[in-house]
Image 1 (spheres, rainbow, N blue to C red):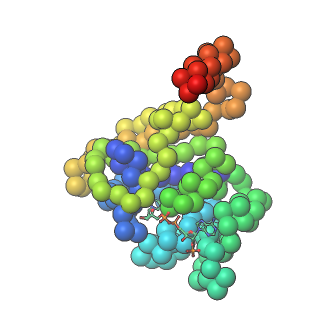
Image 2: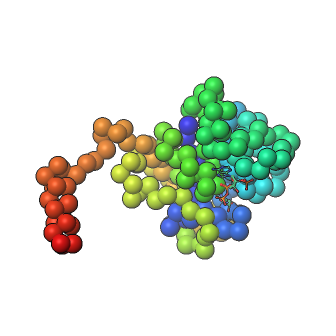
Image 3: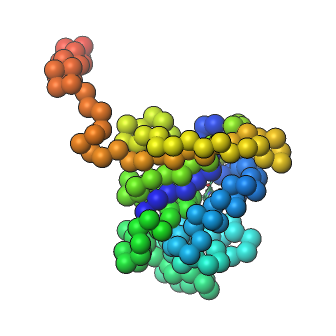
Length: 187
Ligand SMILES: NC(=O)c1ccc[n+]([C@@H]2O[C@H](COP(=O)([O-])OP(=O)(O)OC[C@H]3O[C@@H](n4cnc5c(N)ncnc54)[C@H](OP(=O)(O)O)[C@@H]3O)[C@@H](O)[C@H]2O)c1
């Protein structure tokens, strides 16, 4: 499974149930990448789509509401239940598409994260984890994007999950010393 997301400078992704940046090129790329595959999303993200479920894709929606059963989607009662529904699909064509709660729950099950970085600051109430600050992720590629109709520059950055054995670790002696320093400061 891969995640796909559009972020602002501080990794903001949404405000009041809506996206932060209007970016038509990014929308087209989103459609190209996800078309024919499976998309996993939270209930609020589905409800933010003006046209309802995404056409040409298997829509799996996470909701804890027992009576939630909109047309055109499969409802999963938890993020893990959504993964179980998608278990038989080609993992390269399963996409985690948000929002914040579902990214937070399932990002560590993703192989790659396709991040559109929009060079702007916008008030947000939903965020994606800052992958530049996370040793579990490294940049695999960066492609130029362009400039939106509103004049926002953007680029496409693909992050790859670092295999556990490749993840940077503190040298053993260093971590031992820092542990001791902390303890002696407390004493
Ligand atoms: N920039 C981007 O690329 C991007 C992409 C997607 C979304 N967004 C933005 O993100 C924001 C929405 O994010 P969000 O976090 O508020 O909502 P969300 O993740 O889309 O949906 C939240 C809902 O998912 C269900 N859910 C989540 N975790 C669950 C669990 N463990 N068990 C059962 N149900 C669970 C709940 O539905 P019930 O309440 O029905 O139980 C919950 O209210 C919006 O502003 C949207 O525009 C941005």
